Image 1 (cartoon, rainbow, N blue to C red):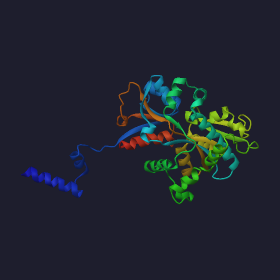
Image 2: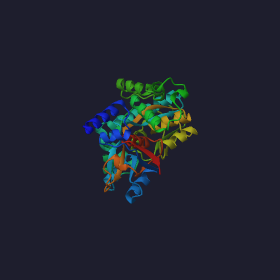
Image 3: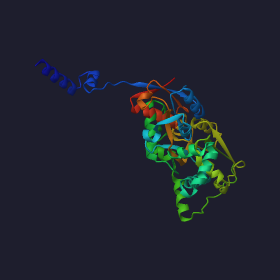
Image 4: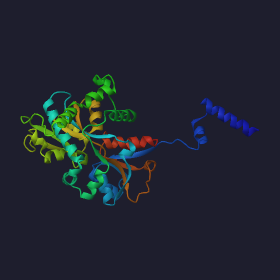
Length: 356
């Protein structure tokens, strides 16, 4: 009889919300416990070496670094970024300033659309693979593997961009809200931040006339940034090799200077000191730095969705995100898309990130 009374009392307490949290967890057969994943910041090149020596337990990088670890036999995929956040936007093409330079914006958007279309055209597959190998310095096996997980797009899904803002609020990296810059809400910010007008005009013109080229901007001296050996930025390399920039008056090495950077945070710092007119970069640092630091820019095109991964050593006993508890994971920098992916994966598994 006493057992029945105790059981009834426990049910009553649970329903009333008065039972202690650990009691509730024990009733459900689980126990809530927040673990920690420790992160270090380093370049993707260092990640590959440190994974092989055991200095780190895992890394999160852009392609083709993940594929290289797998094809060389030193690493294996723990989780693709698309499994953490399906169809997530990754890299974009951005122009310095929130207005002006309309001809330049249209010219760069056209070159980007042409390059993305080139990549996605199966008739160009072998030539595209060679361009990818030339740009990244990787062999064909690694490039083919990397392209399996990378989707090239001429414009990102603006609704999915809001996911980054939500994550930044949760992990505390967002210091200033869109309202601080005068935007009514998140939607208004992203409508202004990612301007689809240029891509829509380019697509409309090309549909009517596939040979259409926008007005020349030959009188300008432009510096265009990108991330070194980042397969996500392949549209930039193809646009330069296929003559798309030159077609709009931007001659590489003359009126167009192409400048590589270590990661998207470094690109945003270059925007801050007015070193760049435009650049390819991850959407996460672009959003974060514009809001927190007031670095003015606008997205005028996309580059890719997904294309990052969490990689562990091939013989590691790590089989799930939960197994990363108390482990050391390398990221290319705070505020990057890769740090966003790791943070989201951690929070989805009731864990947090902490600098080592």
